[in-house]
Amino acid sequence: MPGGSGRRLLVVVGRELCLFSSIDASRIPVKQRREFIELAVRRASPFSDPEYDLTWFGAHAAIWYWPRSRVTALLGNDFQPDSPMLAESGFVPPSTDTNGAELLRLEQGYNGRIWDQQRLLADRWWLDIPSQAEWTIFLRSAGQPASDLPEVSEPQYQTQSWFQRTGARRTGLIGASGWLKPAAIALASIGCLLVGLELGSGLRGVTDLRTAEQTRSQLGTQVDAVFAARSEAEANAAELIELLQLRPIQTQSTLLAEVRNVMPTTNWQINNWAQPEPGKLEVAFIMPDAAPDALVSAWEASPMFDSVSANIDSNSAQRIVIRAKVMPSLPALQQDAPAEVTP
Image (cartoon, rainbow, N blue to C red; front, side, top):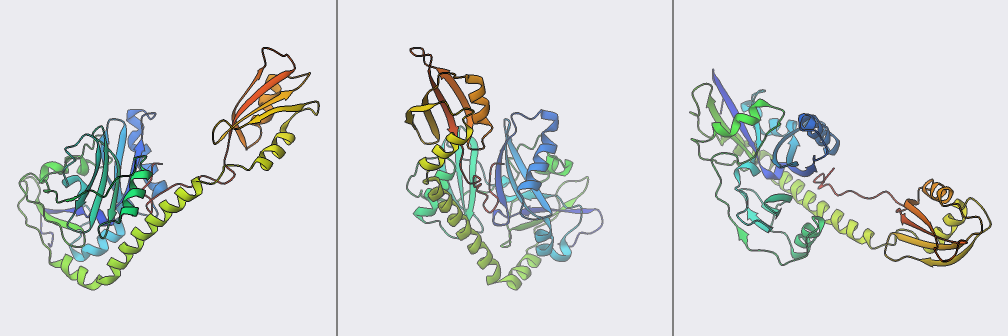
């Protein structure tokens, strides 16, 4: 609705316009977490003008972010530069179950959420009900076991956001939940809610869907096609990551060649070669002049090995056992849906 004199618009951004990320800030001092979150959002965002909303679960932040220019374009002339933006997810009540996954039908599309000890681990949006394969990938990407697609639930939207925004960067975000107490939440089909706010006297406006419907009709199937393509890309990326993880980290011939290169002397013989588990290497050498410190330094100088230890056999001073973590030959892929990741 047009923002008249003394009025301010509140924008609720639909889940379909948002990307999600979960960030562990436990090692960041409390006073520095706001700057840390802003930097993390800018680094993870595929767009240049990210806006975000968040909630804290102890030292873990669940973040929903979106392109500001996209939202302002959808709102057209009704947008005001100082309009606060909140995520729709803040008005969808948290799960009553301490642990588990749920599938919700929103005003637009479907929302999957995974909870662990009342903390939100993962959050994903689909245009249509996800397939069993997509749901399995969603669970596994959050470290959860595969399970059947749950029954779809229809949440009752709250009239105020449940997000805990302590440390949020904008004062408008911190106080915005109180503005909505007298209002019923209505979501426009493009994912934006306009609520007229009378500054200093609470909520007096009403929801205006006219501009939203006009924009929706203009975008039409193009918007749906973009959302569908994004959902398909997310599923394909997650499946590719799972397939790549099945590949051996390094081949035996590559490991043997690297061991030969890093050994600081030539006076040695391999007595035993083993990989007790994927990503671990254990090699026993016969070395008359074994120097554990020199061997550890030489191995850790290689990009292929990490967490190296060297121990002389208690039964033979000429036998030394080296254990190391094997690093992958390719950079690890990070899933971001397209940026829904844990930086």
